[in-house]
Length: 496
Image (tube, rainbow, N blue to C red):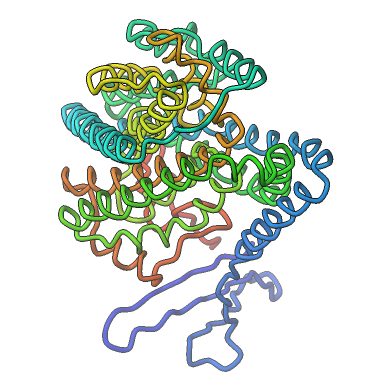
């Protein structure tokens, strides 16, 4: 048996000493042969820094996106046939969301000594989300009324049929149905249904229960910490097929729409993209700097790979697991991340609010039935409520738009067919804005409740403390609760 002993001594000239001890026999006596390496010892084994091979992965994603666009333009039928590749990759990501959210929230809530702190974080987050959703609605209303999108367009029978299909997908919704939908049918169905809010509810109840158990719940928390590590390892493996998914998704959308889908409605698309950029750059950037003294572009650069992933899949939910890991690495406490991020994915939909606003005004203008300001506000508030929980579903915004119009102004539903062809491209800007809003919200909430390590954030954003892309784990901030004293292992003793 080999025992490795590491001793670190302090002082001005600190040294790291490693002793390798192996058993040896000399007659009937057992001796020890010890070899000691210090930094000054010639031939001392040096551990090279780990190589970040994931940069090749995201380079492959960029190449795959370009290749997918080319295939979709050159061979549209082939591009459309490749759609299952993108669908399968997004499904793999969504498969991991429920266990990641559950582990993160339970570990965050269960490790907090006082339940009141969890309520404070949740209440502050909900209040912030409501304010920002209102700001996004106002910006969308102002830009939409100034642009007057949709003028001069005409509906065809084919477009009317597409609008009816989207209205059927959206269905009718109200606040009561939304609230009842948060409660899962069974404890297990919260994980199998893929509903983020249902998983959030079960995780919060579990976290509070473990919190009430005190030290008796610590072994369960320790076990969940290991399960979380396993889940993130699986996610890291799934990410290696991202280029395949990006290739299939981009080939399909380009093959289905081509240049015509972009050219016919360029005004709406450009206006929507500019509005999202202004909201992120001006509104979110100003708030982040004023309250947290964090530069927005540094934060966006830190999350660059997540933005690339969203751009290739058109779903902000595909980057949710990585956002949780990166926010913890940035210096936001696990409790704040576990509550703010999953809740924000259902309630902090800034991009969706802007999209629904501008799309509604576009449809009303195109059908020759403009809405008054009061009608605009009432309809949009309803659709914002109906869209909760659908942030990660590609195309859910279009279904929500059609369903909201069907329930409030059925005469406008036919106009939804005008934007069916470009919704996939607008979905990308919508998802990117939602993601940026949730990242900023997590930092702000952590700063307001004083659970944000600003010094660590500066180290991370400057690149001096890089994120481990290969494992998605944050070993240097392991705040897993220790096991009870009775279960602690005694230190290993060397044979005498």
